[in-house]
Length: 343
Image 1 (cartoon, rainbow, N blue to C red):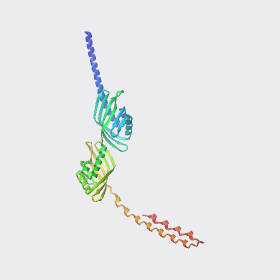
Image 2 (cartoon, rainbow, N blue to C red; image 1 turned 180 degrees about the horizontal axis):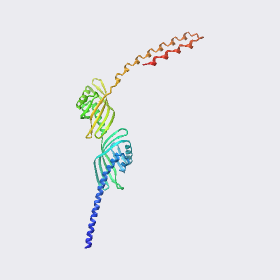
Image 3 (cartoon, rainbow, N blue to C red; image 1 turned 180 degrees about the vertical axis):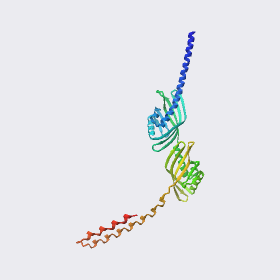
Image 4 (spheres, rainbow, N blue to C red; image 1 turned 135 degrees about the horizontal axis):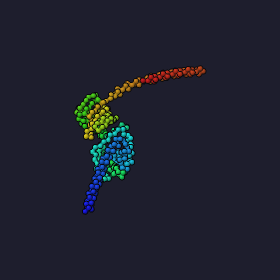
């Protein structure tokens, strides 16, 4: 009976230990979820610190990384890509949203988040990208997570969206379509014309219609594009619009205008909030070349036409006392040819 009691007591002692083992196993999995979540924090820190080695340490040696619009890399290729990229970055701000971590087993996990990367390069370029990133994580023998696979997808390049907006605006000019042009603007946009006139969007659309009146076609291009600001809320840029407007009366208007835009970002789309246009006056339109003094160049009366050679004393030369020693050629008027003061 004592044995039974003892056995019962032994079973009671073993039961909490067994439960404790189960709790420890659950806690281990919970801890692994936390560690997987912390991998995202370490990833963001490495990017913001431009610490290539800290970033590469997160990946397994057999990793495969897909970077949208860039390439599909193995570990060594990805290392080369990151080292080259980080070397050219001047400023960077990386954050994330939508973070989710799933534990598939004690040795496998999935993490997913949307990265937000805003950077400038040493060469003065800008980038603002949002990318969904999915990781397949593997628990390593050393007791930590490693990224076995990274898939980037659904990339949004906000610089490319700026360029697309500008191209759509250009297409509206070439189509002689004021309604298409003004779709690039916010409803309350402020618009300044080259003469300083301030227009509402409706007034600007009407001014474009007046400008295109009598036109049969238009060929346009933009150049000197310069992006001077890019954030998650706003952007600023400048460019030059140059176009030839071919009119129905067979005349052609050549126009060149400089534009400065301020833009705001709403629901991942850009819109122009402020436009300032300016034009330089080209002095060549009254170039003095039209009355160039060359038309009366003094060469037309060059003294060569009366060169003293025509009365050279050789015509009466007495050979025995040849006047050639004092030939008038030595004082040929060519030495004072008016070409030296040619206008």
